[in-house]
Amino acid sequence: MQEHHFAARRTARYCTLGPASAAQEVWFVMHGYGQLAGTFIRHFEPIDDGHRLIVAPEALSRFYLPGHRRVGASWMTKEDRLTEIDDYLAYLDALYDRLFESIDRSRVTVHVLGFSQGAATASRWSTLGHVDADRLILWAGDLAHDLDLAAHAETLQGLNLTLVVGTDDEFVTPERLAGLEALLIQHSIPYRLRPFKGPHRMDAETLTLLTEE
Image 1 (cartoon, rainbow, N blue to C red):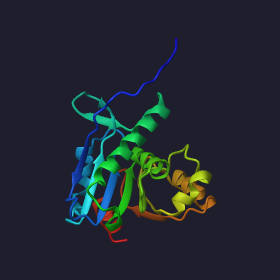
Image 2 (cartoon, rainbow, N blue to C red):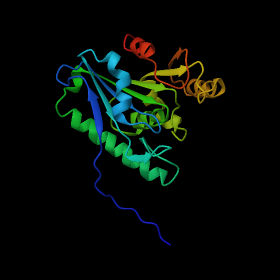
Image 3 (cartoon, rainbow, N blue to C red):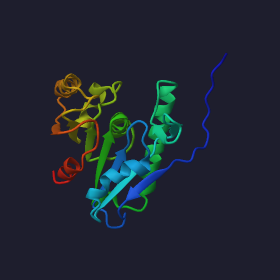
Image 4 (cartoon, helix red, strand yellow):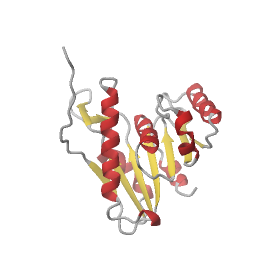
């Protein structure tokens, strides 16, 4: 048996909040495993103030959630993972280019936020893609575990990196968070830690505070 790959056309979906014409900030927000862009972007309604364009790309791999009544999406799985990573990086780069055809990059700040599985996606895109980000927010998630921090430390050092985690997050345990912090310190990557009281979820109050930093 021989395995082969070839590029095939695929239509991607993304959702937005806010007007592009008046945007002073552009936020790219990456959903977590099993979520969809249309539901995830609702978490950002509290910061939709007319001067912020929020862009939620949807992962390319959709599937039925348990019970087959709802659908979710995943950025990648362990199956053919390197190809899936290449595909979503190319997709996010194309989306970035599309949006900035009509937005003057010099007049806005660019924020990249990834929630849960989307945190790995956000960290890969911020270092391996051609997005020109001013800020990276990893919410209830990690840097991509296979990211070469020695090679990309300079890029990450130039980002305003914020880690957001709930005090009762069942996935980002204190041990896992400590490991991530140790890794960042080892590579001299500055960061802010923004904890909030709660489990593995988005939090409106914390999100609003992030817009004030």
